[in-house]
Image (tube, rainbow, N blue to C red; front, side):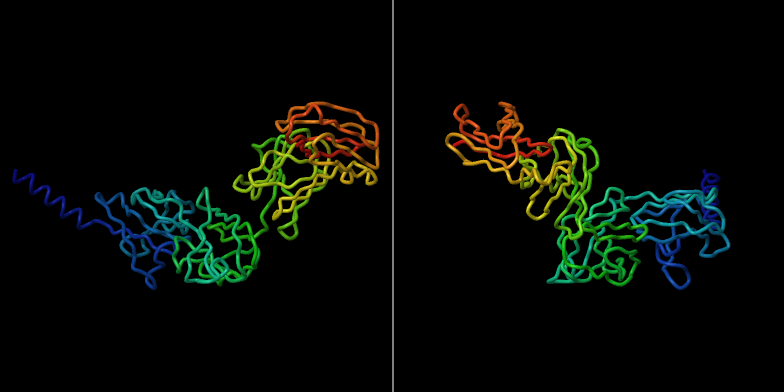
Length: 386
């Protein structure tokens, strides 16, 4: 028994006599010694595997070193894990909280994230004109902890930073607007007032403030499960796209490729979209499309139609009516189709005249839709029977 106890004591003292100290240093932690500090040491139970839990890293570089000196040190080129080599390159780091492990014998290292992605917000007078840098930031969204976005926020004219985890000393800035590359502890960004779609890459610092995108999608294009076809804008208010070919089907407009804000209506080719409104019925053709973001007004102009045969001038009256409707146009009305509110087709007529009386005597009171064709041009009108 005495021999076993003595053996254990000798092993204990021998281990502690030769145990090495392993620390992590660099701009990703507390900086490089000896000018920065304090140096962060890892713990071990076997003098081989060294660990530290919940270590907060910033975006930068680190190395492991032994006994607080550079005689023995490990570096690598990959993150969050890799094979460290003696006097190897600095290890690039991504800001976050990690459990860190180093194997002193083979040099392997791992950084395992222990928390959710770090929060990135936009902070300053451009966000909170009343409280400025004393106010809270507006958090951005991320799916990977690298690219962060903010949609639908109206900025005031003023300065702002990107900052992480609400830390006033952990900010990125630049003097460029609307695009640039922010640097850690750089100057504040001068932001113009208005609504912008903001992106920020936490690794590179690249950012952009762009007008909200307006896209169109649906079965008249490639379906609702694919990416939007974006319209273009010069002011963030009016959006257009030219010569877009559509098939028979339905479409909707939406902002920033998200269903959070979308517009729809039952009118075609002219109407006013409402938030979360119904799908817009479309007749196949090639169109120039315009959309106003603030009002929801839209137009689909058939690019193959004749300028002289503009169905926008078509008259449908009286509407609402108790009896019949009169359809009147300067050009020949070739055909019309009548649909009920559910989209069921009720009749098809070929007037071949400039004026036609659409009888309402056999219809119940309610809302109907009529598609009118004249040459290559056509339009949809909503009609009401009282």
